Length: 273
Image (tube, rainbow, N blue to C red; front, side, top):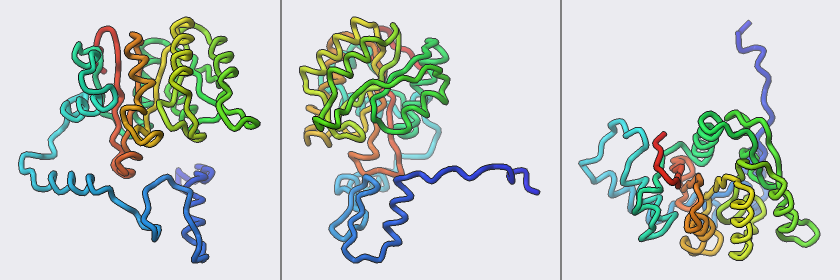
């Protein structure tokens, strides 16, 4: 008997199971709304023109190679990603308070940040929105966090944010707790706090000494303006917060199999890890 014979089959991942069911469906009028990916009118994968242009430039560039990257990743790429997130002329970047660490997808960036917070800073409690992306809970628990808690976010009756409930739950958080915040285009509701509400969230995080951990997977998708969608992260930085931000480009570049992601760190004293 194989040593792997006792391994139980895991439950199917819902979104991929739905996608497979759709592919097998013979209805000519079907529309696949399962996997969040660009598609043509015929339902075929669509590559952004700018991505095609970049790919052609990479192939034609003889200076590129496949050598090992520096520990923190390709500096020119992490700098560009940090600038997209924090904006041209960012004081945090200029003063070297902010830097990026190249990771494997949004999941990888969350894991690197979570392990650092748990192992090095000894944080044990984290908060995530109800509802949220299912991997938030798993990543932090597997990284060592022992106190997972939720904060209210969606009000089913009002079809909007339960902002009062959110503040009430976070106000009860213990000092030093990590709070996962969706930078824009909240997954799965798609509803974001207003700029005034973000300011109130920042006030509360400062008051309760909470550690913000932003997940920025959809910059540009919420409003169509990458700068507007970066408001929350930039505002927290302007307020002087130390924070992490898992910034990924699988969605807004359509690079689903590439999984480019950066764990941006904004700290009083830069720390490499």
